[in-house]
Length: 481
Image (cartoon, rainbow, N blue to C red):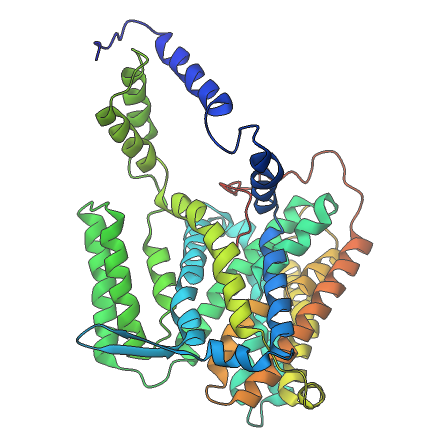
């Protein structure tokens, strides 16, 4: 390999130009002119970049589950998702149904992404600015308390008393999908308001799951879990950057929580909150090395490996993991969760019984009525007390529409429903009917109210990256959840 020539200031620029040309015209399959790339690969890639794509896949999975569970092959739905799968680790053996593996293991990825989002918002996003975060935080609190209160008034005195946490949740995937379908009719400030509200709502749901839906707590296993969390902190202090080391500790943490009685998916949240939100290396380090390495317009394998490492560590770990895991969560984890949990049997009088069930009615009233009323009431009190002001370009009617959209509970509501009535299949089915019906009504109501209240787009006020918003543009325009 020829010697580097640091005296040639234009060499790095020429090398970058050559690399850019190779990327756009070279052998990469997606940019080629092959028919399969033009007609299939690139359209699929563009679809996955649509803001509402994750919501559409989630909706399709839900429809597929309902059709499957109410078709002539309904028996296969139950037998498939209740198939026992055992994992023998030598010391201990885990045996759960396929549905439980989805809910207890696969959903860890979803909750890990939630933890990453919360960490980012606390360090770099809206939640770090008290003035910006005050109104959506108060609104989220109202949007959790009022639905829970309505549910308790309707169903709190009977066998459904433990389901009060079900209507507290907001499904970010569907909520963002609805706003994405409305496009520029919704001001960017209103979108940020709903996203921040949903993040705070996630925090509330996590606290509710951890505190109120934990049974048979084992202090020894819980202590082991805290010890593993402490180990992660020590690994960070020692600057252990190998991702596989954290994956191994994360799996052990999941197992410890599973054995402790605390829901195992909270391991994902905990690890997400401990993930660094700042870059491990300064950008100048990678930039300086790249300038030197590219001066002779050649790179040997050692230089490529080092350059890849320096560039990789110049991006905050939280942002890197969000970029990689958002598609996995949105396009695989959540659709599989919906397919495994949304298959409600509507025949045999189940639908009629659900319509008369205090559980289903309590959930529906909490999501459809309690969410917008709680959010509007909380915002009114906060503004009157001087804690915040309406987001720029929004009206009270629009806040009501956003509150209605926040009533789409779905994913987290289904998740909490499974925790609320363990072993009570009929109650769980009634809860699912209430969740599905309420989510459809809330989405339709929110769209109507927002369409009526929203003004025509003015200029570029609703661009996806508002430089004054204090939030980052998404690394990839994929569904958040």
